[in-house]
Length: 177
Image (tube, rainbow, N blue to C red; front, side, top):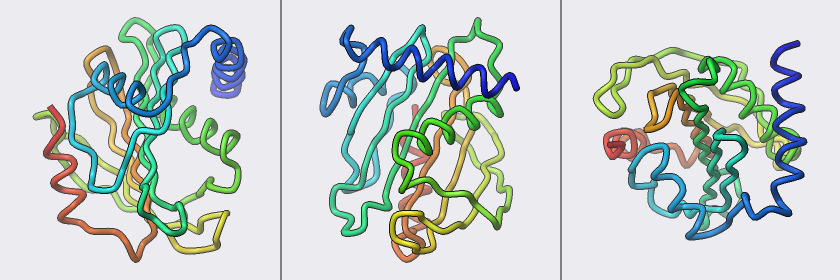
């Protein structure tokens, strides 16, 4: 119930902030990502939007060269003082993606936990596969919790399974600073 309340609050605040200029697109959105962490996006990914609501920051990237639009990455960060857990961040992010781009929402069915290092922090990433709602293709989704510049953060990386390149993913994670 707490998650639903947080999500509803985020949606209401998002609707109000569009008129206030707290939602940015393109290069401005990419610049906002530095408030969470500095990194180099994988080749072909470009910043699509950012939203800053009450210190909760969300950035979305799309793979520009993907013919089926299955390449997405999202970063979300809550303020340190919010007490929001990475589990709540993940649910909020998934809910926001599902409501904002219903056809792109993916529920993973097969998951594995793998140890990774991001920004020098050893964490556990979750990698799973699922079916993309917009094209019924198998996609791979990775979520990585980490400590951002302003509080707890989460990376969600999704791409068509046929386009998954583990070396690219590893280089992407290594680029976080």
